[in-house]
Image (cartoon, rainbow, N blue to C red; front, side):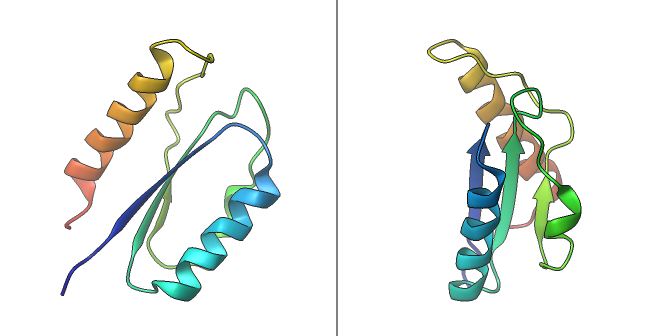
Length: 88
């Protein structure tokens, strides 16, 4: 069976992030979701996601700056987490 891994990179609108996770999980229950949120921009309540199976939040986030390498670095850090922790 194919396992899909979703990466959500966010920096604001935590309610929208929650709705997106809920929608993905409703349509793809066996999927894995990795959230890389810039906590320096807005608060994301990690406890809200505990009811979903296979949803992970990167705790060692990268502070993002629009148009800078930090966006690429955050993506690479997330890929590293996936390769070390998720079988897909």
